Amino acid sequence: MNEQSAHRADVYVDLDAVRHNVEVLSAHARSSGARTMAVVKADGYGHGAVATARAALRSGADWLGVALISEALRLREHGVRAPVLCWLYRPEDEIAAAVRAEVDLSVSTVAQLREVARAAASAGVTARVHLKIDTGLHRNGASAEEWGRLVDEAAKAAADGVVEVFAVWSHLACADEPGHPSVEMQARRFREAYLRALEAGLRPLRHLANSAALLTRPDLHFDMVRPGIALYGLDPVPQAGPHDLRPAMTFRSTVVLTRRIAAGESVSYGHSWTAPEETTVALVPVGYADGVPRSLSGRMSVWLGGRRRPVVGTVCMDQLVVWCGDDPVREGEEVVLFGPGDRGEPTADEWARELGTIHYEIVTGMARPRVSRTVPEEEP
Image 1 (cartoon, rainbow, N blue to C red):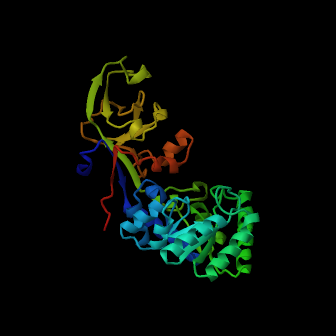
Image 2: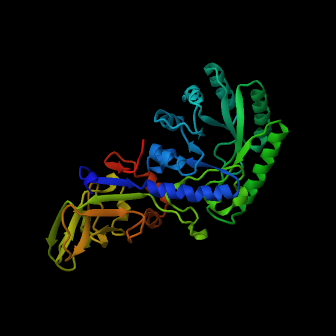
Image 3: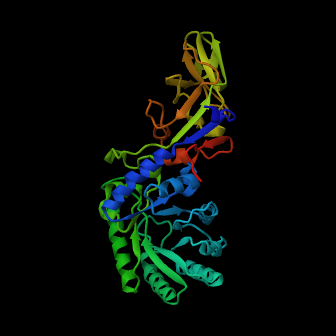
């Protein structure tokens, strides 16, 4: 663990796992004749946007997807030239810079379309846009009532050469619940919106499927799919699996101190745990400031010395304590807080279930100032 020795805690990202996952997901897409857009927003779901984008593009992805213009421009600054779609921006954001950098922009309103058109005219280029229809998630996207006006104005702007309408798209609310009636409702509304775009004279591509729909609904692949969490090996629909995905993130630290304590002695704040007999405990320099939820106190274990061991007492801001019994645990030994689970170590999904949340929140929450990120396979 030499590469981590200077750090208290470390997130290790296995790009081989990312490549494997992209190959699996792209094979699903190709079976339906669809392209693959790898979603690398939120710094690649905490895994590193640039590294995971490069790995995805080398393993079968055709496109990249991000939320913010700043995320798209960062990819461009690092030499990533593949098509990139950005879907969440404000009028004051760098729309002209995005258009100049050949970043595709999602458009949900006529006002937004006009902003993009102005930015394109000012930059002297044609902006490529994806028109978004709200089919039931009710975040962004044009309502059914607004949709006709949006596609008509987009068709006029396209005829004027200011924009190119590349795609029509939407996003599913409950695809991770196979059989949920909203999926069929949204698919029907999406098809109706696409037909209206054709009536306006547009010939756009279509994309709707996220990770869950990619894995469970090939009929909704259309022209392109947008896997996000599945790229990183976390299954959005394990109940419909297995899907041969490999978790890419391992969260690890090291033992910095061991000590023997007598039976009846207690550890950490509140003395919530008391040693039942004389025992060894190990101190690990990672806590809730580093991404270990305090609410996991008394409910978590780690992988240390070839086996799972319970964390005892309260998880502190900077440290936690592991119960080791009489085993000869040494200072400097690696501690895995979560990983792929191949050896029996805890996983991000296990943390999520224990906390009553989703694994998305666990991995994206690992982007913290005191936690380094190691991506040894990264290539320029």
